[in-house]
Each structure stands twice: as structure tokens, then as C-alpha cells.
Image (cartoon, rainbow, N blue to C red; front, side):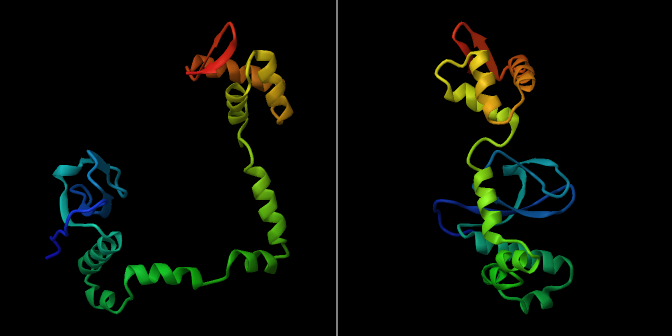
Length: 182
């Protein structure tokens, strides 16, 4: 019923089904394996039942939606709905936008955006700041890394213990010139 294929092109989308739990999902291109989003079962892509293979992601979504509706004896209700693509376009016009929501709750949307932007300027975690020091410094010695990360809010003791841990896990190595990533 749904088994058809369109011409070849760049990306292809396949609606596939899980033999373990009967979930349906969409897979892009032809990976060696894929996991069921419902039960987590790993499948070889070539062994999966492919209900449709198409160049259009929207078409694959339509077929999957129609199959799910049919499986639940709701094909009539499905026919009354707009296409998946149309519904996706309409989603932005439904409800309250972020700015209005924040304003209605006494918050300044511009201040929140500015705070988010300043948070995203550099590495966010202490580990990231330490690794950034190793990547950025010309001579990432322990002293230089501690100083760099400390200036960015990482306590010196935390830097030293993190350097030891990163070396133990094989993320970095220390030689005569200092630390470097592996």
C-alpha cells in the first residue's frame, strides 16, 4: 500500500518499522545501523522493512502519519488534518511568543537575551575552560593553565585535580613543553 520509491537524489528518507515493538520512524539516507526510538533495539538498516523511500522528508512524515492513523483505526480523522508540512508552518503562529510570555511575567526579554549571549561567549563548564586553556596558550604549563582557568572562574585546586583526571583518562598528555590534547 505505502511501498513506493521516487527517483534518486541527494538525501533519501525511509519510513521503517521495528520488528521488536512495531514502532515506525524515519531514517535519513542509508546508515549501516539504526536504533528504534521507542525500545532502543539496534537494527541493521538493510534488514528493516522499508515502507517508503523518498527524497522528501515531508512526504516520509506524511506516510508515517497515515500509517500510524491507520494502525489506530483513525484514518478518517487523519484525512481531515492539514499536511504535516502545513502544520509545521502553523506551529509558530500558535500560542504566545517568548517575548510576550517573559514580559507578562515581569521579566525583561532584552536583559535575558543579553545574559544568554554573555554566557555563550566562551566555554561553559569548568572542564571546557581548562581544555580551552590548553588549546589557547602557547605554552600550556600547569602554572599557565591554572592562571588562565582561574581568571575564568575555575578554582586553582579544581584546575590541578582536573588536569590529573584528564591525563588519567587520556584526554591530555603532559610533556616538557606543558599539556596538550590527544
